[in-house]
Every structure is written in structure tokens, then in C-alpha cells.
Amino acid sequence: MPVIAVVDYEMGNLHSVCKGLEKAGATPKITHSFKEIEQADAVVLPGVGAFDPAVQHLRSRGLEQPIKDTIASGKPFLGICLGLQILFESSAEGTQPGLGIVKGKVKRFIPEPDITIPHMGWNQLEITQPKSIMWEHLPSQPWVYFVHSYYVEPTDPQIRAAIVTHGTQTVTAAIARDNLMAVQFHPEKSSNIGLQILSNFVAQVREEVAA
Image 1 (cartoon, rainbow, N blue to C red):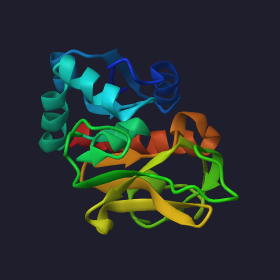
Image 2: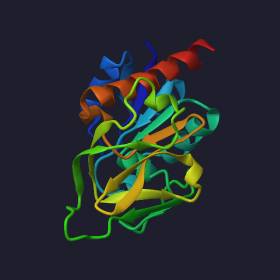
Image 3: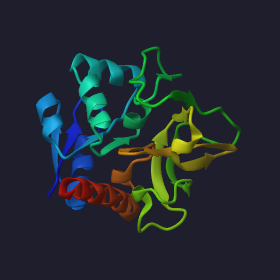
Image 4: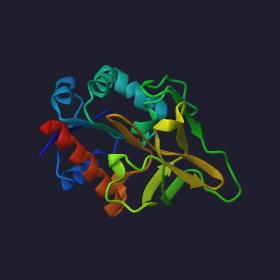
């Protein structure tokens, strides 16, 4: 079973992510060790909470460069929720610079009369990169579970792998570029659909290990 490093920077629901990865056929390892991240077959960056504390915790633990190195090396990488947002350059939620691995900004939903912020609960994805491995064996408009008030807006729209509509606002729900994948929703809370997404990621990791 491939070993997947789950990055621990005190900002993620690590145990439910690990449970999901185990069900998907991987061996997850919660870690903030540069060496263990480097030795793992793939890396998952989960995250729950606010942007500024997240990037501060990452930097104080010396994890910014290992994450950048992992992605640059071509190793499969999956960001989840806040773990997607901190890959970007900046956020309307805070003043700290993001990791800047993906060009673009994190924005806040605009209040509307008939929507709640945070956008919370089940919603349907519209897939914009149908050939991405993330979406294999899924229906064309899968339902997944969201909890967020902020969303990413990449400079390059081509990296959007899925979008979601909340009220009148259609925003990025997932990105994919080469070995880098990241989702705004929570696959570990998205029932069978989420498990299939994690299984697709693990399958890609297995392919990389075997190559």
C-alpha cells in the first residue's frame, strides 16, 4: 500500500482524512517531518480554519519549502479545503502571503438575500476537466460536501477541474495541474463519491510508484 504523508500543521481534520485514505487503500502517515514528507509516495495537505493562522503554522514548522519541493518533484499532491486556498498567492480572509504555488487569489462570497455564508452542505459539481483522474468512475455532476466562506480564483482558468454554484455565484470547486490536485469540498465527508475521489488519487499514486 502506498504511504501518503498527511501534513500536520494543527489546522486539519487529520483523522477523518486518514480514515478515508485507509479505506481507499493507502497507508496514511500524519507528520510534520520534512524527511517523512520527502520519503512518502504522495502528500495530502488538509485544512480547516482561517488562512493567516494556517500559513503561519506551516512556516513556523518549516513546511513551506517541503510542500513546494514535493509539488515541483512531480509527486502526487492533494490539497483539501483550506489546503487548497493556502496554495494561492493571497486571501481576502487575511494579510499573510499564501504559498504562491498557484497564481491567483482567495475571495469571499458576496452576500445575497437567499444564500447562507458559509456555503455549507451538499452541492453539485460541474466538471470542467472531465479527463482528470479525480473524476474517474463518478457521475457527471457528483454531489459533494462543502463548508467554506471563501473560494479560490486562479489566474489561469484552465487549471479549474470543477466549479460549483452557490446562489448566483459560480466559483472554483477543484483545480488540477500535472501532479497537483486540490479541492474546496471535503472528500472525507462526501460519502461514496468522496471515497471514490480519494481512491482515484491513491490509484494515481500506485501508478507513479510502479512506474
